Amino acid sequence: MITLGKNFRLDNDDRCYILQERKIVKNGENKGAERWENVCYPSTLESALKTYRDLLLKRRSAADKALNIERLIYF
Image 1: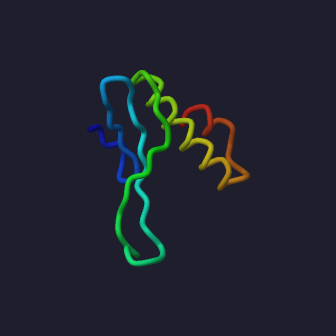
Image 2: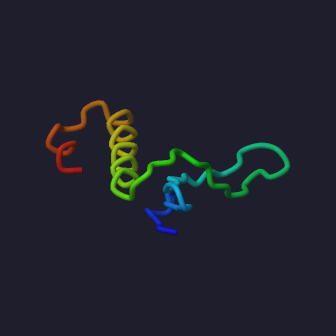
């Protein structure tokens, strides 16, 4: 298991890596409980880390419409 900050981690099996995101249950019997949701199943560590980087970049740029292009390049 590779921890990527507090909200993401990489797990793996014999065939692929599994990028997982931490979620908190908002409703129901398990409200407030932590669970890990599978995001994707890249076949290499390099593609797993690129996917993680790209996901964070997309979320950051979507949240901040005035994001400077230099910050995007060097993120």
